[in-house]
Image (cartoon, rainbow, N blue to C red):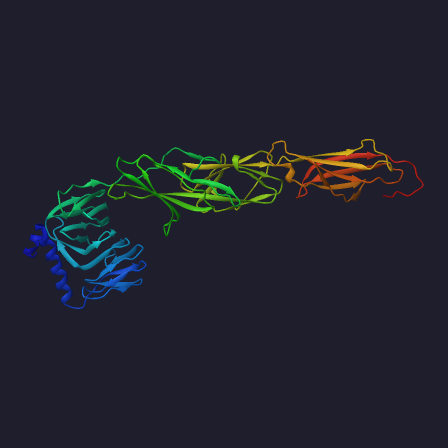
Length: 489
């Protein structure tokens, strides 16, 4: 090893020596690509060499040795040649240098990749077998990340380095400190240095089941038609002095954030605004006073939509579906959702629901893989009926017209009878007779005119719903009198 490497522990000499190594390698020949911009951010630029100009970049742009990048308004992703992935935050400037060697551990030196961070922040994921990454800031501040995951951020006071996994070594004013996985350290350009601190603990959702209802929000909700529902969750409190960063995400893949909240440590709970049908995820992580966040925990959440056939009634306050015979309910937004008839195993949600018996049926809904929260929907057969009355009871033709009164009722009070317009099927003896109904208060009325003839006649009336299901029946015998005239209406 070059004897000069032993001077790296002497503070500013460390930065000066590494810089000279990088510049020398650049001068020996054509710069080689050290990384590829996999995902540029809007407004991102690249300066290929220190004397160059800043130019726009596109996906797959190569970053040469000595090249620098500035991210724009979004997050950018850069991948080094060994597979190391950098997720670079908006407003960050990084310069990429040739690999070099440092005394990361006792014994032989270790060859590491190197970047200089001027401002901003990044996350790094180094694969097993990849080179450690040395990130250098101004004023003799360094962090060397081992294979695993870590973070670095420039602050007004210096730099903050964190190791999520794998560990790291950090240096300030020439003093190296080991950083274990799950620790972070504030590296100051001036003043006394602090030792490593633990990263915030991982959020743990409450293990008590949450049973969603019309008045209680949990991780799943069921609505009807264009209805909306709130989603909610609770988890354990954070350490004193920390805060919760909470994001409701609409799309897990691209991380579209619908709502962001920062909550006090003793307020570990979330309640959304009324949400439309769809898949949601709740992201929860604790953060320190310096803005160092812990591991993010994602919880899937769902709003499922029912699309009832005409005639099916949804009673939201009781989470109840009332089915006339033959009607069904389509189900929408069921990705990642399971159902179970009470007493049976969970299965994928069927495309439609229907009531196929006399007794009520209950269906339990949950997000797949989440056994804590659920909601129960009851399927009930419609109890609508119609009282059909024919008067007068001692009718004689051709004297008396027959009055028909139909009153629709629901003994269970699930459906408003005023919303039901019954139809009549009328037969005089065996001959069908067309008869309409007109509303009269809370009833429907019709009239059969008298006919001539000797009789007798049997009048049969059935009150029907829109699907020809019989709601009620009426029967009347009518007496006639002898007449030489043929039977006419």
